[in-house]
Length: 425
Image 1 (cartoon, helix red, strand yellow):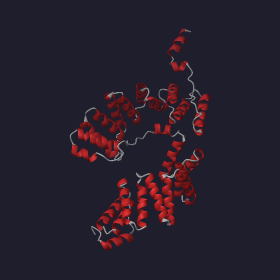
Image 2: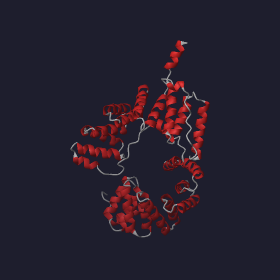
Image 3: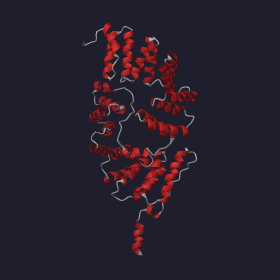
Image 4: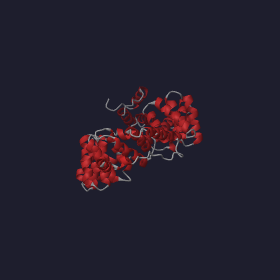
């Protein structure tokens, strides 16, 4: 009897009290989200001793922003999992994500347990370093970032985090080489570029600092391979997440997947102009312009400034040979989304066809500033410059187009050579 009482006292509190299955209020949620919550909760009620069921429900809650309820699930999953179970890393890592802003010290403790059991997951070391840094534990953060670099030697984010830590700690000479190495791996990450400029300036190398100062995307971070967190986010079935997935599928050329997602979205958001325009674009990309056109028109009826719908209508008008109609639509697209280069390129193309070369060149120059890596823009610029008699500049644009993998039509090149020999030939 005494022995059994001692064993009972030594049990963790969670083993003495049955943990309630979280039941968030779903009355204001989209129906498909409420259904997902209900399915996972029902599964869990039937299998309360199944750590996987707690994890699945926790991930579903977490993906939809219910972090407090998710933390309850992750904690219970951790309790049920054996010491060597690989799923314990998932439970502890996602638990730390869920509570990092409200209970950072407990998040650190969970991550320390996670990496002690499974030290080979770089994102866990990164998260541990980030939270330690937020808690002003610079030494602990540095140790975690160094371990992340050991586990994943090519991690741009680990180098960026460690370099930023050194920079904040007044060690710019140590920060600069780390940030340069990070930028070499992730040259598009504006946050690295901005930090490197600061480090070089603070280290006294102001000339090199100017090379990296400015630019766009100063807040953009390098990507990181984090399959645990990614799997959790994929459980998000809210319409904003479905729309983001549909757009990503279309951009990646996965048109069948995008089509199905947009079909689902039309049921959920039948009067959303962005959904209608996106679905139209998928149909147009799939060779169904007749089906795309009414979707574009419905989108602009709901939102006259919907840029994708305006661009789609402009493209359809251009294919029909309706140049004034195409110009009108592309101008509306550019006005609605002036930071997108392709609208300016399309407008410049139409203006050239209409014989308004100087206006067209102006639009193309804007496009080239917004996207210097677009070869088609350079081809069109070469045509405009040649038409204006600026042959040397036209050849420069031809060279830029070729460098970007776009070859101008041979007939145009022959005509240009007749006016000015091609440089270097």
